[in-house]
Length: 528
Image (cartoon, rainbow, N blue to C red; front, side):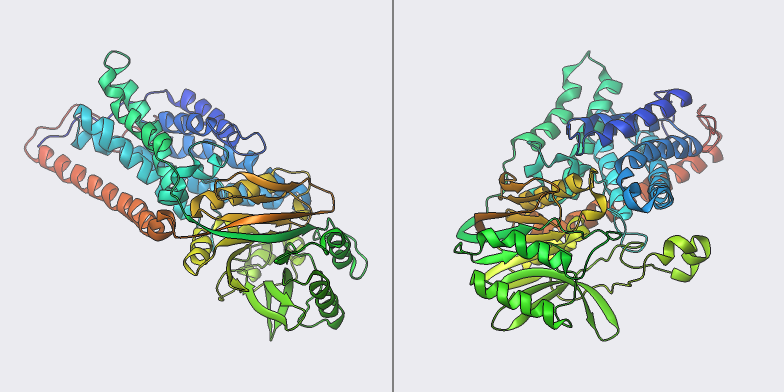
């Protein structure tokens, strides 16, 4: 069977580069602090249109421009304390991966219609493959190198949108997939039928209906939990000048107004102590006194030492028993909380690497506390962006989540709002309330629908008290989320490899019988 001709570019190369430049900036505007969530579809659309009909070299170029435009804006907050070198390094590696993944998208656009050129195959099958390949790239970038950086996932842009509830069924990766499928289906409808035949819009309409109509998965109410959450606004940034116990005292002072409330638990943020209560008697005594006065257990956080290892640790503390349960951060931040391959990076930027003195060890204990019979899921700071940490807490029995963070290094930037959006998405995805607590803000208590129950403004000391809804029952996202990622990731790669093999075999077959088509041979269109 002969192959259909390879698709021609929708845009000339110069226009595709310009569209990619605009598309990356538009996509960033879908996330906080701007947060115009519909722009995620526009940004993805710019990226896809720019890749149709491109050569490998052309796809690499436009993908690089798109990635640079997005990431240099999206994570500019890194420069707040660390300067331009880490910003360019992280944005650069993410841009490179975005560019390499763009080649796969271009190959999908090239190979699929050559094998299945029919109208309905292009309208249905091609968008599904494009959505899978985009999600595959996103999952790879979120897991490698080291622990990856899943910060710019498309699904995470929808925390304030009516589409966020889809994540309760298929997780954030599934939401990304359906968003890209819809966008690609709209593009194919225009390419195949323009505005002459409304039937070409049916696949896009079905994808839109799935995004809009499917309700959030219901979890079961299990009472309430009276939570006090304290934002001390102490000098907790990496380079802040501080007096001994100043961070601890700031938290104690901000806790004072709510200690007479009838609390079930009192929660402090990541980095809210300043010293290791497992080693420092004064800090332990202060926590004992606080728990006794509040007549409630504490969930606090500190850097702890056990043997030769240092951990970023959440601690369940009571006046009676001290540290009753521990959870150590699963994914310490490379180049922030530890330096992988330190010998290599010290040879490149010794002064910068020298600033990172501690080497946090990844935790292996469960992200879960049992607090007087209430299951509490945990994620420390950037662990909120890793699906497995969140899903493990839910599967272990979490009825509510406590997400402790220290945003002090990123004061006055979009980082804290972006991380808050991730926390909101986790509430919707798991059907659980979330107590998202920062040293300096933004701190919020969020209900299972994603609505804000209580909030504290940034850069002020204060405390929140709320009767937080508890929920039981696992959402489909938690149950099938890992399988969804495997199918979308490895399944899309397998399909793409299969398409390439079929194209290669058929191209050889037609050449052997002297029936080559007039289309350019694979790889011969490097100027596109």
